[in-house]
Length: 115
Length: 111
Image (cartoon, rainbow over all chains, first blue to last red; front, side, top):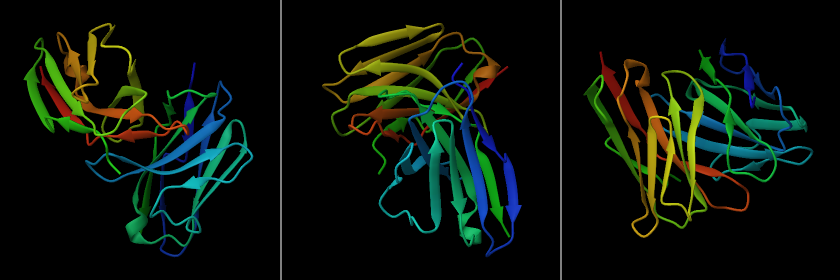
């Protein structure tokens, strides 16, 4: 149980285009989903927290107009990187939690490369 | 901002040996969790220890928590080559259930 999937697992896009990454909880209802960014050999940096049906809460320094997050259902959250630039290239990981708990279940990550 | 600091940053041991990784944090917490990440993959939850617990076991894993020193340790006993991965501690304490991750320890277990 507690499986989280991400799609796509990797994507290459051209500078200036937008990319959408999906995060799905497969066997539980995720009231809260989190989006992280991870640079090579570094730790996870929380980008935003999203609760189903409400606006995402972004961490300081994360541009909400650039990283659009939608959590329209209890099993799906999407992260759209708008007008991507090479510096947006990174590993993006989502996680989901069920209810008021601290344990998070992580997706396998999406490797984004912007050329 | 980063709260947890893992120590050491990298650890290389032989199969069968024990591996100990430490984590220190700065603010009060509700719980501390350890995660494992294989290269280029997502994170796998290993164990959660609450602030009122001092030690917890799960299989070959043993986690301790010392809230007075704001530190935790993860011990992997009888290590295997398949244990090779990065290990992160993460602290939780806010009402929004956010986790703050440390920088991680890269463990290499040589066969």
